[in-house]
Length: 601
Ligand code: NOJ
Image (cartoon, rainbow, N blue to C red; front, top):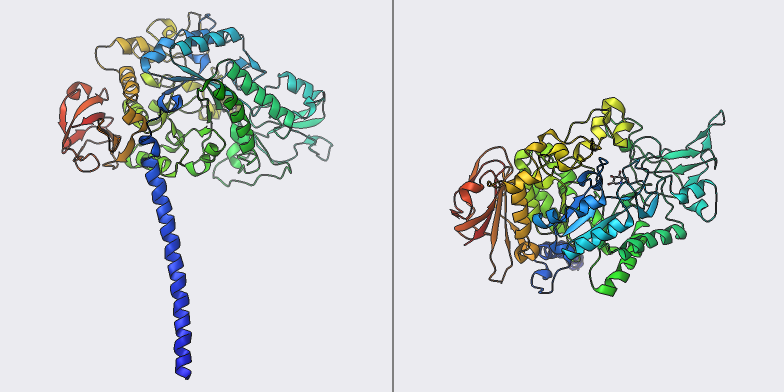
């Protein structure tokens, strides 16, 4: 009897244990299936079989123009809108479908246009509103879209809203973030907390008139707008409407991370990163001043305004967010009706390059992409070093090839199509306030001037950028050899010609909506197949050597599953030897910096 009871008890325990194990296995299995589903979705999105046309921003190459540095039409040494209009043919030649213009708004230029004193007008330095309209008109005639830079987080201190706010005039008194602050023992005002500006030093600025501090995440001349005030939200919605009315096809949203701060003004905790002085932004963690959840509703509001226009003419309006977050964080922006920039190739990629590292960065985008997501890969911008300086000039062609053959929209910073190099700037020549803030000893760590030098158009004086006596920043001394004209006319393939050819190749639906399957990857090599499964369109094999030594491999197994192909594009380093030639995939050799696009046979 006793033993029967015992057996029963053991039985029950065993059953319970088995049940828990069963639950655990089920849990793991479900997670695995969910992960697999996401991965497969990313590689084989339903869009591939979907025959509907893709929105323009999925099929276009986006090209960032920094207007100050692009083309000067009136000989004052500073680029302008008419200058950009005069270069529309260049965009066509390089196969660009959309141009993102950095700010051209009225501005005292403390942060070169990111300090806006009138959100609805063009700075005379860049031209007039009519010039903007004309640019949009001419661009649209050529099928090129215009993406404006929207700077919602702050205005200039010269904006009339701020001027009125300083005087306490209603309703502007609450348009900015004003706080009383504290007093030291001598009665001197001290900032309400330890919050730091991105450009260094306290983010609180004393205003003698209002006897209060205002908050600014960047320069003191860039006071932060108060998005907790519905009037500010309405004003900025109207600014979006204004530029849509003027024909903009999309907008890049600046500094969105900083849009809200917590209201309780608690000190931010130390980051404890080694070697960071207390006035530098990285000295603190920024959980009270960046990435607050309130941002979502504001972005949804802008989307609503853009949708008003989209529903009228049926043409999609594109909103892309400046963010440097990891995919699992930035993907939330899709849910708000916008797209995040993928800056992994800008900030995540470090020298020396390896195939393995690049694959990991690209693959994580695809695996983590939500169903409604679409990658927007960026290789550089006006805030980050040029490709040639980061990785070496010998990898410029391969990196352009990578950007233009990935699945997702590519975004190129002006000048990368000719492999522009950075200029050297002395402290005296330094223009960027971020560099100036850190003084002669450390300006080079922060100044963004080296990669904002004038575009190199031809071999004439100042690279054809200006007919004036001096451009606002020095032109790179290599301009006589490295410029658009020389590279366009060269009988030998150049970086520019390769860029243009690849951008045209990207019009092939395989590169727009086909899946991307990674092949051999190691320290040197990155390779992948682009194909549309179940269709009879061409399949392509793309292979690079990003390493430092020669590499010979057999690529003929899956996913290429082919012994040969014809080289249709290659980096300038090897194009002459391989163009249009049939090559065997079983022993393909690539030197450092080589890259090829092979049509599989
Ligand atoms: C981000 C812009 O890209 C950068 O150039 C600017 O300095 C800051 N926002 C402040 O507006």
